[in-house]
Length: 234
Image (cartoon, rainbow, N blue to C red):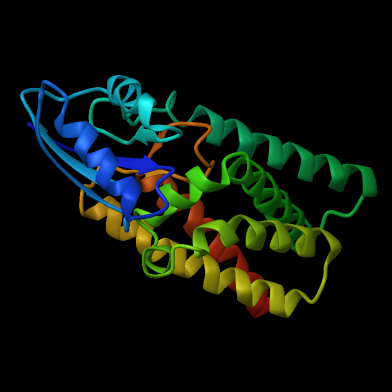
């Protein structure tokens, strides 16, 4: 059986060579093709091997992590996306609480606060494992595929946008950057979802195992629509 896995922690050709050598030494792996860009391995074996088993097998090599195999990706259900749903509820409650406290029931203010909180919260989870996020993001984002360092920069872009929204700094420029950033990100997400690839969504970094799906499209699309709407108003 053939399976595709993403490997985090690889930095050079030497990493690729020793991981590939180690994988083919596994009794139930017939062949393995490992690449650095994207950081992935395609394994052919007698059965689908779980991420936990592969991670254990690679332990002697150092700090490498495997995820996104068919065996380990959770089913796409409401329970799977619970962290994402809870985060959105928190953002809505915090935004609403601020509007109540200030007595300003303004749509533009609400959108600005929500988007600011969104970017700050999402950047936080990505920064918990910056290398892991960068490797995962590179597997589907069109810019990160061509320029791997973009995955390491992206969380800081989100953090900067979040702070700019909260501080209401240069709304026209901030919304323009957001529209471009989310639009480009959405392209990679849509391509991955419609190609039926089993890929881990990196929206909350590597802390949670969220499969790529239409939920991810809605998430990026919502930010894109809100940014465009605010651009038109300004």
